[in-house]
Image (cartoon, rainbow, N blue to C red; front, side, top):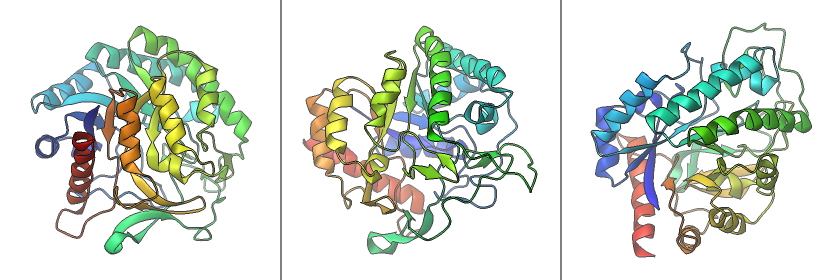
Length: 351
């Protein structure tokens, strides 16, 4: 298996490439949608515009992607995956809106561009409400800053404002309008359209689509149904289209938080079946509707068992820490991520 690292759009620079190389990671998962900016990114639910206003940019083209790939190669790093579409580019696919056919053609073009550049994985999260509902505070060991889902901390069914999707604003909205209530069945139907349209193009261009579970994994959030909120639902995802490019973005923390148990069993199954695109290696304490993100060595997941399962099944994909509690110092994000990478590297090398 390969040790990777996730970098946000504003973090894709020489200093951070050096940092990633220095701590022993070799592969990069790049978030090209512009959220969590700044030198010390903080994960949260965001403010009135959620994670922010979408950059008004075209589909990421060959010139842009190949430029990023060359920058990474110059620092001995491999551009393994893009994580998440810009909501501006697929809002009507999620909403079943009038531009969905135009937008699916744009996403096909993105997959073609990735294939030409040689970026093998596109990670995505098929969700209307997105990652929302978390609180940020001193929840982790030693009062480290982290995120938590806290029952009763807010109204989890507060409607999504017009002009927002996936917890980002893609256009100005009408203050008196909201995203309509959406049943889970409708979301599955939209996912089916998405997969059946894109997977043939993914196959032609040797790019995998890797689905992240919904987080928080509640059945309904902001009056919209949630899918991939229990690990067994990944079987349904795969049964929609049996293409070998239909894969899972295996977020250990998100799956552990779910109502259903069985993380290790599902990891064993999907790693054995070569259905994992890449892995978010993070830990949590608790389950919905109350959990916190913990340090990688301090949660409910037995991370030693996780690595043993992956080695047994000859998993050859990438593991990244995704995100982690922040450490008290002048560079909280870098220190927290370096701690997580060192722990992961130690497990890989010692087991």
